[in-house]
Length: 366
Image (cartoon, rainbow, N blue to C red; front, side, top):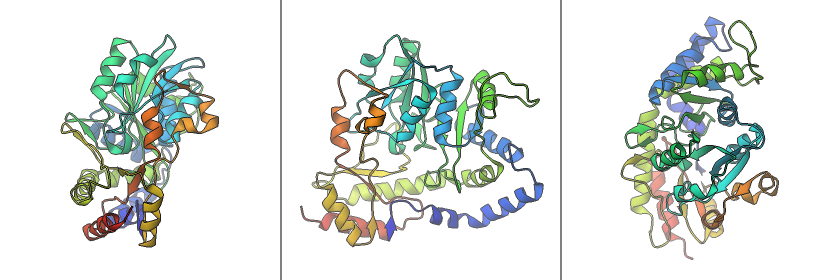
């Protein structure tokens, strides 16, 4: 089978370095919030053009803690998109706020910044901008809207680690950037993990306390907190893999370029990217009106494609009951979720396999 993602192959490509790093870490005997976490936090924050990094348990927790750090409470509203992983909206709800869902741009599949202004009310405390599939959202436009309305901007970079918008790393535009290190991500660990980056020292120090019950190094408690720590094991793996992230992202771009050059454009709509940003292709997502037929045809040829996501957040009744939809509705979102397919893409995927996938795709009659 050719899978749309293959974290095992990603591990094998760096297994020697990872094993050596893990052996060194095990000998030190420190497993929670030790030197490995501190070193990775420093390396990753520098990589993201930010001053501080705070390792946490997951990308979901990263968003939750970022919202709690800016004092989000019940009754507050946070603007985001419905075309995202459930985790984005789940974290907002967990913080006590009401997610306000705006439509997407049908070409970029990211939040349509033109729809943000209409959704701002006196209750709006933050905008959570998602860089979907590794494609940077028009973050400068959203940043202007946030500043004009004195609203804080947070970036959900779970699918876009290493992406650039106008030569600046995603995660460094907002007051905080939130990352996921789930195994299938561009920078993935061997389990769950997450990170918040910021250049605001007050927020960094507050999050460090909230992630561990609210206490400081002397266990003096100032805030109500939770247990959301990035452990030493995952920090060891991630610090090792970070060295190859740009190389891996470039390989993803080569695969994406091959798809874009070789897929039949009369049958499929390929991803759009801006000339002034660097897409890192966490997923290569095409659009088609014949999704089920294509998925079945691919599977018969041992190609396992995916759909991210079959339902937008507002199409899940239990989540919709906790959200508010923007005045202009979610027309583009409703249309897109019926058409999208995630084709296989990961750094170790061979170009011959990509060619095979394109040949199979182009030969499907519909």
